[in-house]
Amino acid sequence: MVLRWLARHGATVTVDTPPLLTDIAQQFSGEMGRPVTPWEVDHAVWRGTLRTLT
Image: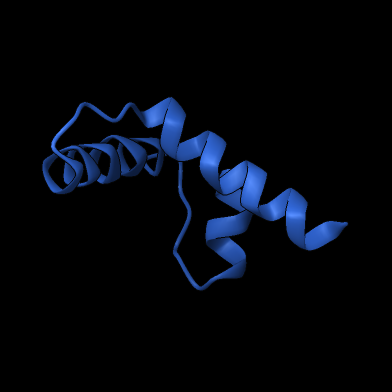
């Protein structure tokens, strides 16, 4: 679902895209001052997408 969301928002999605979630998690970890996992990034996008569908 996240890869489709990224594609709809103009990102180029390939088989190499999943490391992007790791990079985003690392960036958020630094900004938030706590560990953020790639799963949390994936889940946040997924939940946000569900809200727009309902």
